[in-house]
Length: 289
Image 1 (tube, rainbow, N blue to C red):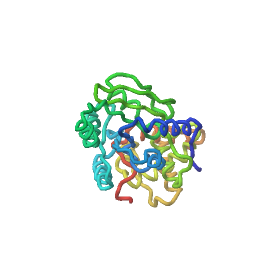
Image 2: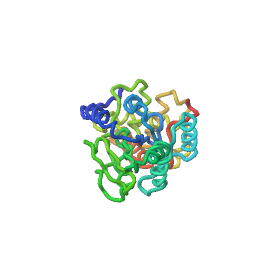
Image 3: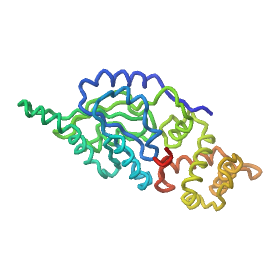
């Protein structure tokens, strides 16, 4: 299966972002802490050009903290400031404003030297669908000003949101890019919920999820679903399907003749992965690079 999802509103969203850039002091690029590489839109570098940027890894409560630390070090080596946050609980949310101030410190000091009183920082929030933009904005604002939903495509337009007296945020719809050069990127986005479910073959996505989880987090997979025998060979499709069937049997996904309903089992696998029921999992590491 080839995964691709680029509805028309994403083209419009990119155009709107480019039109507003002259008003922006800093860009806050949101990444999913479970897939920091795959959730980086390669178009963002072209869109933002030379704007100061802060990388915020969302959903850190669902990600492997050891890998998150590696990603923070990786971005630092690339010259990018980053922070990992949990918008649901507010963990490290305060670091966003403080780091934004650090990145703009010299510019604001130059303004003060000229007798200017720097206005509130204007920050652009940008990221892929379902990365947690609206949840983060509501947490920063201290009130429900952005529509949230555990599905991609909830935010449809731009809006300015005041955060205290020192920051204004421009919320934008999530944007993907027209073509995934590496289909593994598409699968990881699908696994974590960034792509509209209705266009996916859930069995195919779950197959790739089981393959990745078996290689990286077999103990967590085994414990959650009560299965014992890992795939003998991750490159053998029959072995991956066997694990999916084992999970289906454990969860009662059976049809006539005792066969496993793989579509039903696949839905369970993906829902529990996305909800963090398997524990804190990261599907890609700087070590892979």
